[in-house]
Length: 95
Image (cartoon, rainbow, N blue to C red):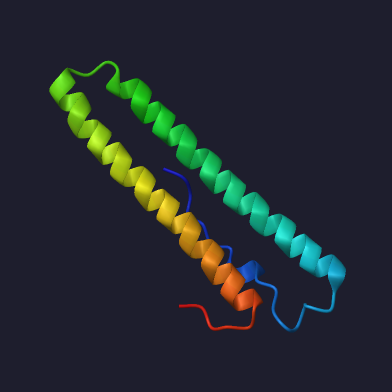
């Protein structure tokens, strides 16, 4: 399971929007966080798939459902964090 993802602290707010170097640094750091989170999620899924190969068919089916649900949740986390980041960067309040 990847570590929690929180890129909201890197949002491009009014206090830094005129500092091109700070904006670039924050965008780069936010991209790195998202990339690491996605990579760890994918590796976790691959580990789960490999573990399923050793299971009896019925157990593998149950594990595949759990893995699909976990991956769906991880995808939603990434999507939600990126939306919050973009909202704050656009001057809106995060939900």
